[in-house]
Image (cartoon, rainbow, N blue to C red; front, side):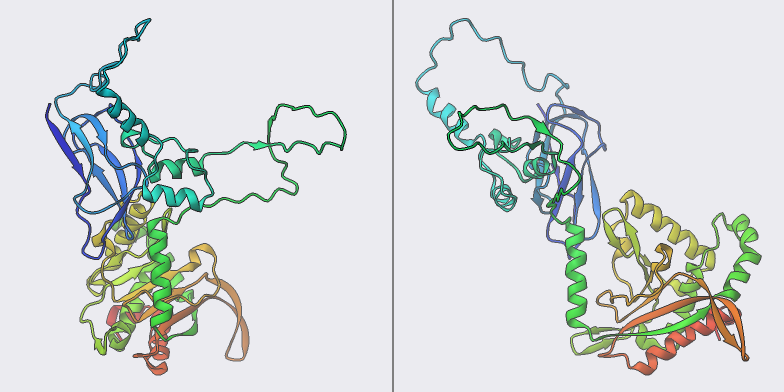
Length: 420
């Protein structure tokens, strides 16, 4: 027998613990080297834990939903075993079993006493969900109930049992069988309690931190998107043929943001204690919605990226977010962020700053609106921009002029080519 331990991969310096999501293999099943055994969720990303060697998964040390740390052993693989032969099959019970030796009784009793015992985290979760002790079957070592067992039981569909009708006083009692029925939609008020994912809990924590530590103020402006739309329409086909990616609006927004940050460096700065840190680089965070929550991957050195570079990187981030493949390095850092709620139809919002950054740009849906130009009412495709900023270090002047610089760059895109 050659046992290889499966350990939690290294986490980033700012991440102390993680949560096991769901094992893709069961104890006793064969695994191949580098086969993904389980996904591990941190407060930033979801990591995949591969099998360090091929063999048979002989033991799962930590079940679904368990909280773990870096390098912690979560399973063991026997590289010399064969699936199906890892655990010998139980022999048929004899017709008259011989009495067990007296010495074995305490061991059997000890094992039985462990079965059904809930681990501390599992016991707390059962209490929070109003689950009676012993109501959840355990899959942990010696039959212990793990946090994953409780999560699985809590998410399982539950049959609704019809309540027995009231029995008139003095009427003969008759116990009727209880039949599971589906609750009618009319008047039904179902509830479901689901624990926050680690990522969602971290997002909530950071948003509260941002609102409690920053003096957030938001300034707005309206952008005539016609020039950008015309330029995009003119070069879309050639751009896609040349670079293999569509020319979207986000590359223009990123370029306009960098243009403004260069003019007003305080918008690209951050607060560290009583110091203001001015960044000599432009790492732009792009807020992306993923199945597990909001993530903000970073376009590093965005000032050195071409339109094609930006579009390719954003497309890569979008696919990674969809597949849950974003890494910690993809989302670490950032000096300024852009949130494009317009993709979902948002007309106006006040974005929350992503700490430790000091400003964030909110972009919205472009809609045809009646505008007055030279005393005439004309229809123009307008987009409302909102920039939230930390008033502790950014004055209204810099914030407003920074947003005006973005407006001017987008309403005359040639400025982006000459950086004027």
